[in-house]
Image 1 (cartoon, one colour):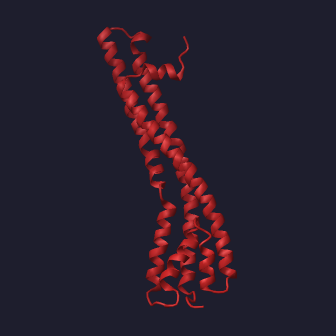
Image 2 (tube, one colour):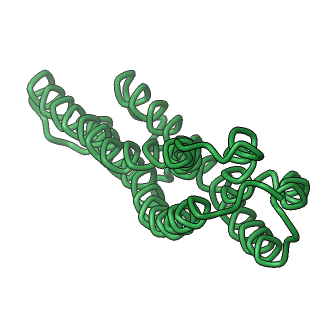
Image 3 (cartoon, one colour):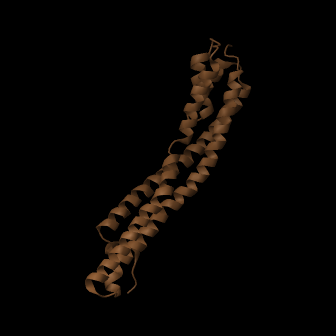
Amino acid sequence: MELTVIDLIKQTGVVAKAVLLILLFFSILSWAVIFYKWKLFKNMKKENQKFFEAFLNSNGAKELFAIAKRFELSPLASLYRGVFSEAYGKNPSNIEAITKKYSSDEINKVESYLGFLATTGSTTPFIGLFGTVWGIMDAFRHIGLKGSASIATVAPGIAEALVTTAAGLFAAIPAVIAYNYFTSQANKIINEVNDFSETLLKYPWQD
């Protein structure tokens, strides 16, 4: 009789089912992060471009501040709003510290949730491996108890080994691919933030 994935899951024990639930939790959350960061980075890049064009064509700091309010997802606009709130009309001597503070905030926002993808990619294969080892141990235990190595005896343990291994990889592979891709995208945005920070150090904070 041909076994389906559902049949294999049904044959697993309590430990394997607990492992599968943990892996399912990681997989669902990682896919949620993937879709969220994909949409966020797309909008960030689009708004960054529009805001920087407005920056180049603006007629003064105050006018640009009003424009920056329209771009809620742009790290550049958010950085500008933060620095403007403390620097406009004051021309402070500590403008470098102010800019560094707000640029660090924006970089942290850009990098948010990437650590979870890295954690998922690095830990879920080992969680799956734990289920695999447990399944093999269970298979040998049944052989010892029944004195037989028939398929009926070892099937539950083999099912645990196969299913948890596959589930661990299923959770890990998309997370690793997404982490590498989003890290590359994040670095590009971070470079834009750093470059814009340097520009703001020389910006005339008085109209």
